[in-house]
Image (tube, rainbow, N blue to C red; front, side, top):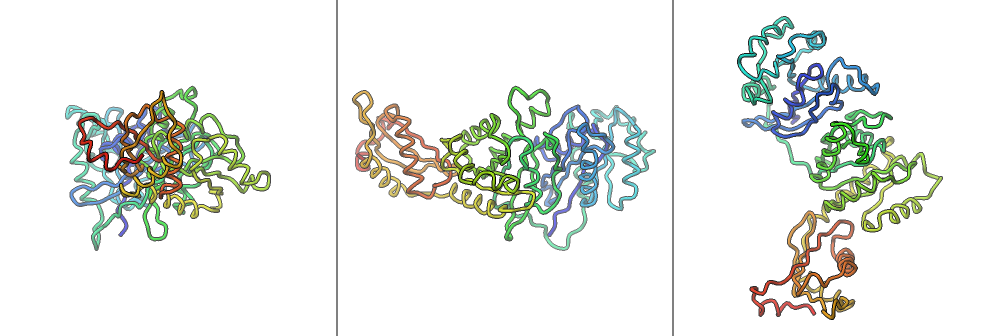
Length: 451
């Protein structure tokens, strides 16, 4: 059963994104005083009093975009209106009726759908009389509310729920099988890829750098399973972050990496690896996220350089990420896209695998016997036992005599053994080496001593 959609519409700077965040109770959409920040449609599933609906934030109507993306933004708004079951028409109580409000009202009069009229920025009931001016737009009495004063949120939700269409059967929204973050610098084809997997013009695609300004969740299905693709803004070098839009876009992109199950790190086949790419890969590694290096636009570059050369270029640039698989795709035509997503599912499965303590102890014992750790200040590192403490990422804990005696190169050796012998071959592993406390029972530990 399709989930009803509720689209928030209105002119720029009336607080549509603020209302979206307010109703969702999450900081999802970027909120800024600059007009035209929202370009793509952003969505969030809300479950209120056993009513499930998808809230949709849209761009401001009637704005001339500074990057000449007005037609694309208007196209996204049109799709949002057409797909919605209920519209929330937002105006600004403090500014009163302006010509763009009349433009929006004229556009909505031909829409045969429930329209909830909302006068935002009414921070107190003293401002409510000012909302009477909006009667002239022909949508009746508006609901006066304020996101900053947290005023009349429940009244707005109740109005939305009353306007939702009746469903003949229970609406059920399965949890997504996997969340995939698509990251990379500007203009590497992230939004094109999202449109390819969603099989719809879900994101604005343009040659203008920075077209996508926010992280947008796009739900799609493949082989009967639900997934979420998180399209992220293209990151810029830290020294190039000059505006709030850049700052929040970077913050959202990093948050998307943290909440994703798998990260797809995009590169442009025609461009050399940049400092921004290196910063992104470093952040992915810090977060221990399963990752696939995706070389996009391969159709434009194929024949000039072999895939082996590009793969070696990546290996040489990121030597600590040698375990990361590499994919060559063309998002615009969909070539190898499904194969890429299938591989992402394999990584997701690896990240949730568990290994028994007995198997892990046997493996560590064999590894240390085959290649004993070097002496450090005449001290021999010793492991008493090993165990897997967590998944996503797989976290292996080694209890030892002194963590300081394990050199970085020996830790890398052990990680290599784990990837080679266990089911964690292509994903990051968190290795924790801890000192056995003297209060722990020596007898129990000595029976599990590995070397």
